[in-house]
Length: 211
Image 1 (cartoon, rainbow, N blue to C red):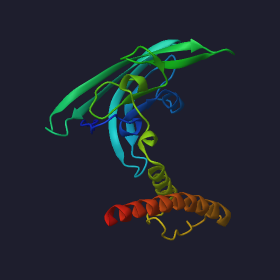
Image 2 (image 1 turned 120 degrees about the horizontal axis):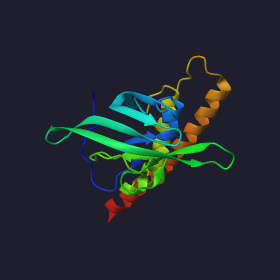
Image 3 (image 1 turned 90 degrees about the horizontal axis):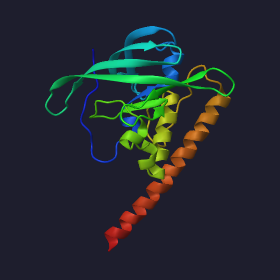
Image 4 (image 1 turned 90 degrees about the vertical axis):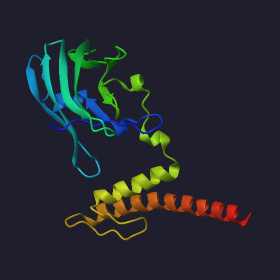
């Protein structure tokens, strides 16, 4: 079974650069069920390409108010190629809801805090809450131009387009013109921001070159 690799680039890691366990989603998809034992393989895929990026086995045992999840996978060191077996045992607990029922939580293995999401940054071997790793969001590192550029390409991909900034976008077959025109308008808005920042950058470079 394919595992999750290691190797971390410098700087504060981001949530998007690692793996995330989403507790509500695990319940929604049936991987976790109160009062039941479940097992299988969890898989992660790239948002951009849809290709599988990681997988790991799991077993879960939940009662009506608490339980646990056991994860196991093979990690490969990107530098040396050395493989090692990793295992996490994560406790689950519940809290009462104001109008009845109970809400499920992970108990962070590092901080003991309750959380609905746990993260595994690249190069680590323990799923933990965001505060345990001081994780940032990718958007916090991006400049306004970076965010606009990311948005422009994301919008193009939704239309099945792989062109560059400013290139024409073909209407997907079967899409209503009104929906397509709205999508083009959002792309134009994002690319206009990119173009404005590009002009400013070029002007600055010219100014530096003339000194």
